[in-house]
Image (cartoon, rainbow, N blue to C red; front, side, top):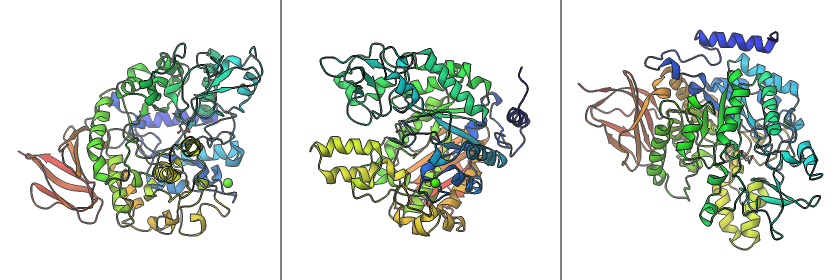
Length: 593
Ligand code: NOJ
Ligand code: CA
């Protein structure tokens, strides 16, 4: 048994304190847990996670690019929000074709973001405040400039050849009809050997060959390196795609409509995850959240079933994938309700899911699901916060969502940096298939860059993000949507997030309680109960501008307003709750009789 270094000793101490239930210790359980069976409680179920896109969070040196010292300078802000875990999007050296998701060295820090010492400082700064860090593990693919790939492409018998997926072409074309998820074919011919390599994303992101045990051993080594540096787990990028279909047959016309279903259904996916758990994760106190594109709920349930030892939770895509197309927010409500109910049911007793309404790949949640009109932006952002943080799932609050940041008013493709949007533009507009204004309107609604514009800290120049020129433009609404103003305004979206996160911490029923939609057919109100032993809550959310008097079902009495998104607390006599436009309420309830 090796002797304990300082980090291991600290981890052991933290584990002991957690076991003792010491409050304020990272991972300590919520105080009142009546009714939660001990064997199902986990610190990562009770955690609220704050994803950070480092390039856009805070720039410390005026080069216009966010960095690790910038994040360190904002740790008090993050801690005051009440979150427990920070998920850091990729921080490794990268050619930045896909902003860090094309990794060229898994064992170092991107120079533009800082140094390893800055990384250690981030870990310890979080630990001091009782928070944990998880990092992005991007191992479905590497950068084409990773030394493994540079070696692999040199010759057909290079020792690294089998780290990637090389095939001969067929009739002067690629080996099969797989499309890349960013546009164009998923194969690129390499002149050096005349073979094609597989890339499910951009050509600069060749897919690793997980069938090669050496690749898997490399991944395990990378994981240990970061865990030993003090991280508490991983968000596993594109993890559903790591096992490829035997023989790589062509997709059928039907499968071509959604290739992710096939890409995600490789026969060894679960075996690779179980091996990862056995070799690495089981030896640490971690949380893992897998990006599970193309995975149906049944598989998601399997992948997170605690008895199978694969992942702790996954991001599923049904909710985030809803297309609004400029319609009224309430038009999405029937589908939101059924997806939330199905997702909750899938989690069941042994599995777990993630609750998220935005991330760095999606439009801003208030623009996607709420009402971004300045008159309704804050109110609707609070309703969405309520939805996000009252699920039986670990909640992810994406940077800036706690301020109600909204989409950027893009007017030209020249303002857009995202590799996927540029591919799509070339394919659609470049080929003449789609008029430029139609595609621009779509990108304004859906572009990933909406989530990547700089964090809005102040109403000053560049929203306080940088003293230089920001790598993406700052949203002009920073003058009215920013952290400094909201921090001193008790009615702000930020203040509401702080109250709501604190409420979730105080009431385990909001984490573990059974979910029941009490009015699935209501056209504008989302109403559900959460129940855990004697503790019961009712969550009411009005998804429209019109006020509504909501009738409580017979036998259900609202006892107390635990949290209202507006000063008016809504309770009006027995049997009825009046909700203003875009108001949410969390009520404690009692069954009558
Ligand atoms: C999912 C990541 O979230 C996204 O940003 C990236 O482009 C792809 N995976 C490829 O790594
Ligand atoms: Ca910088």
